[in-house]
Length: 484
Image (cartoon, rainbow, N blue to C red; front, top):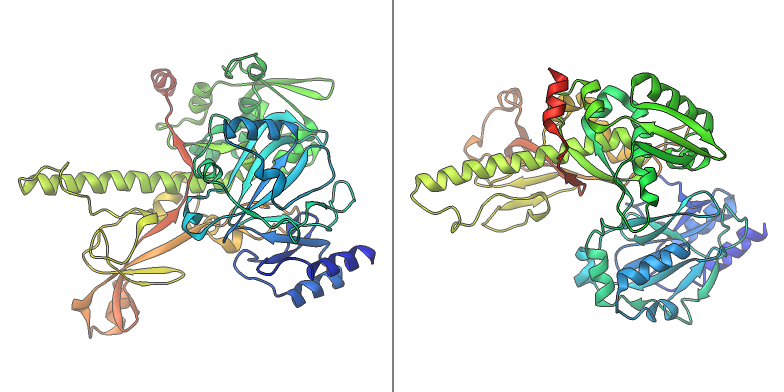
């Protein structure tokens, strides 16, 4: 009861304007918690009922948390900061779980810079005392940070203030820190290249292959980049935590991957497993792919939700391909008019730039699900039917993977899909003013929608995705030869 009482009392001491979220351990448990806020009395009821073990601060909308998870993360922050002054990190609001080298620092961000901040998690390659890789995390929209005096699930002890917000309010984030959050730092990120279309052939076994490639033994070479020696190493504990599986399930994946040819074999040395993985070219040949398809750099922590990532990568790839095709059509039209395409501004609309104006698009109405556009707009997007065909799954599966009601709710038995970020998806509707007065039954047969007293023609979906798509540059001739 002491824990609940302490957390309840702390609710009255948080600064005005802080939006807190009940958590169990480290994670929010309310459905769609990112979209709805609880008032203080509701949070108090959750604490007193025992459903919540603590409170977390909802981030974004002005609050940026820098999670320094381990000594190696602190060194990485110093490296990223360069010659910039880090003294603000010792003055701003900060708290810790009590574990050595762990703390979070809170900064305020002016509204004019909100669009520049991107969530990032950069793993350092150093394993901490809990078996997990230490990381530097820039937390923003869609995330929360557990506040004192909530109980840390690992230590069983409360989080502690380093700088209490009432005495040391959050400082405004310096410009260099905003610039740091604005750009991806792929040279430090622990990513692995994921060929999305391999998932349809190998399924969950692919996680072992990607894990071994990420933790290739050559990464320990002093002063050099990983060269890929064909053998990776990881602990069973580390693999089970990354993949969100028990140790027995990880071992079963190792056996299945060996039978399918994804790995040539594996052996145990103390706590480490040495996994000899098959080359990229041979794996593509085993899958019988005529085209490699899209490849994206994904974080190693995202391997537990590989089936959802495969759908996202296909969706983003299709939008990129549609943009290219649409631009080629536009260039041909401009050339037919005797103009130089380089001197004529493009009218094509990208997903993140739809706005109300005459050019490049005129958005008449904005809704939570639809964008109602005039009949002269240029657009591109992705069709769920094509994504399903490329993924080798049904259209309903694709729709489910790209639906927040599915993504944000953990599975009832194994609590999977935890940590999947929400996705923004909207349907484009084109206004058809010439169809005013058309009979409802006739319009429905043509697949049109009657909304806001007008007929609308549905077009493709717009997905706001930020995967870094990469190219496959390795011996394509060898892959084609193996497929003959």
